[in-house]
Length: 244
Image 1 (tube, rainbow, N blue to C red):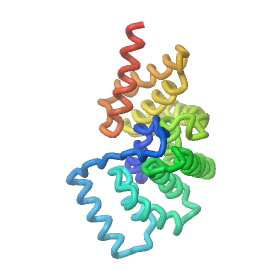
Image 2: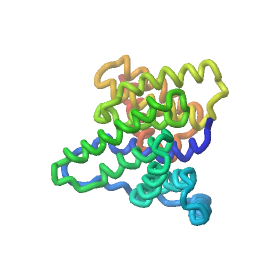
Image 3: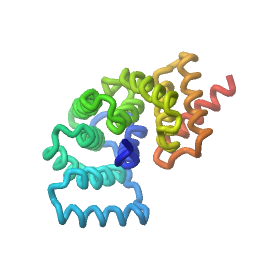
Image 4: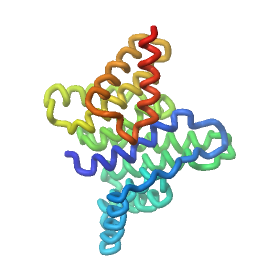
């Protein structure tokens, strides 16, 4: 159930920093993320394995997602596109490939003042959504969709899926309390907190739901390194609500 899920989670967190994407032609800068020693060893291991078997889509998926997390987008695209070409009906590969394509859309220079970036993002998000629909109850693909659309928001064209996935995950957590690792459950709560914060505007009811999810997440563990920007934003929301 959780095969490769942590890698997938990490590579999906780019969404949290791109709410204000479309400010014109200028490319969005996705700062390189430093590799840990373990990650460098993982990269070398995966490269060696791929050199032995250049047609293994699982290896290409894993290394491609690792590159995507570290914002080496073209390296990621090369591997994920190859994996997707080999296994176009694998919904996990499809979701991972188009998540990285969403990143590449933001990183491009767009002489159409952001319109083509928006087109590319929407196409990528449509593919992520379709992967989720095709995969049904597949945990990994559904998690990618929840995180992605929670942070992209309305511009994704599929923001309503967040609340379908909320119901699915809450039922899973309620019926099988030990079914999710703590780190994953915390990330689900943070994603939902952000979604309700985005949805709320000035509506107090949605802000209260956002606050509830944020407090649940923070009670479980410190904010994950990959979600610091989101946690800072949600923390400010908590401070503001506390003053009212």
